[in-house]
Image (cartoon, rainbow, N blue to C red; front, side, top):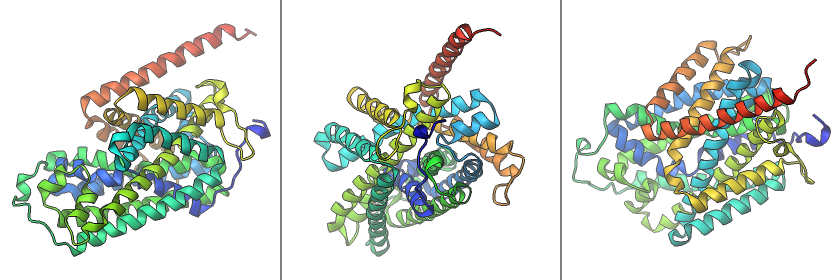
Length: 420
């Protein structure tokens, strides 16, 4: 790899942790508790604990792999190095396609919070603006992520205070009247898991982190610990504040927590915080997808031009612009809110490959024993099969398209490669 194809190592532990936490405290924190509650009911806390445990398995696998292979691309690179080209390709393709859909969903959620009647134009504007920030370099990305993260954390603190002081509304129904139960614990854990998945963004930035062997594991574990504490606290407060029937059917549970409290005048703050969360998560998503696409292009698994790096602050500008274009097309042509579930299967496949790759490492640190990688692999597959059948089938179709395309490319290369 030539010098002009390399990124610069500028991120420390704090910046990398902020990017990871900003990804995990995206739009999901403002909506995920309602559908998870509708599935698990009174067992919501157990679902959060399971999701956190699975996230820890995946996080430590990502941490040890990223420290060993500090290059952009995350599990795509790890899978290729430890398991072979095909597992690496499946992880990368699942991540790029699934997270591109997630980018569109984040942008549209932002538009709906700001002005529902102008949701799509605002979503497109947000994608274009944040792509512009990414093109200015990773240090600008980290700076804006820190600013947005402060806004989100202040909003969540305000929601927590509102839930504590009440008054707590009487829904007139018992917990049994709300949907959900023990059978919904795993599906609810699957939903909650994706709220934790932002630590992958730290691994995909491995080529831009200073002292990666030390920085990446610390940043991943710090971001995950902070996110777990926040999600668990919010789940406990929401269950104690809102009636089960209200929480399980709410389209904006954190907003309702403030509406049904003595601080109801502060609902605008929650809307601002939700918008900031969407922008922060979208910023990190576009960054991570672009880096993974660049890594795949370097190996010839995506078109080679996507690997080009340029600008006064070196960034994979072709990959960034391509991701931007794909997200805008989705916003203009598809009901992206329905495809968010399709990305879930791809993300779980991504982390299953990460756990399998970590399992094959010759040495394992004390915080990441080999059995934990096996548990993470099984857990990812278990959560995947609990997803809606339509989501699984559609994502399998997307994966099949990618596999078929790679077979064609490999066949053409074999015909054009001179025989010795």
